[in-house]
Image (cartoon, rainbow over all chains, first blue to last red; front, side, top):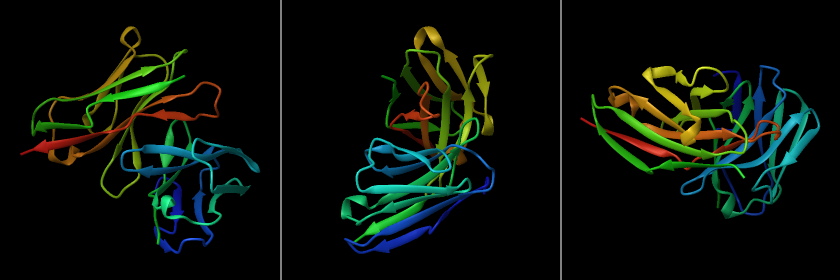
Amino acid sequence: DAGITQSPRHKVTETGTPVTLRCHQTENHRYMYWYRQDPGHGLRLIHYSYGVKDTDKGEVSDGYSVSRSKTEDFLLTLESATSSQTSVYFCAYWGGGYTFGSGTRLTVV
Amino acid sequence: AQSVTQLGSHVSVSEGALVLLRCNYSSSVPPYLFWYVQYPNQGLQLLLKYTTGATLVKGINGFEAEFKKSETSFHLTKPSAHMSDAAEYFCAVSVPDSNYQLIWGAGTKLIIKP
């Protein structure tokens, strides 16, 4: 699994509920990223982290927050899920290139 | 600002034929360049990358790409297509001084005809 896992793999949630997606890496890499992938929009950066407790916004950060309390874990929270956040979410770390997790398919109903 | 253009959202080739996927970029400084492949319902996997040095880069699965600075291109090729190459391919370029953020192309879906 290239040392990076995402959980859950699939989730269905209701509009207005908070949702947290988890990304876990075992490689001790400093830089981590959250993307969403949607047809017609390609890959869009949501947030990224450059160290423990160091995070910054990407191009589509509205409605999302992140936390990184340990090097190995990078959490993405949808504060109040909306249907427009239905997407496939990928996390990645930088190790001379990006290594991606297998993704989380989130459906907001 | 950096940008990446992939020519053709879909490319169709016959099995055994040459694969050519085009990528052009704009960058104010010499970039790092990447090609990734995504199979259905999977994450993206690094095919190859250019950072410095030799401009012809070999990757996995028989793919290679050539960095041409004068043409600001990084086209992906494979001499002979295989059915298993059917996937979506993404070109990406690094953003200087950005904590290794990448700018992504829109992707090209490679279709292999038997």
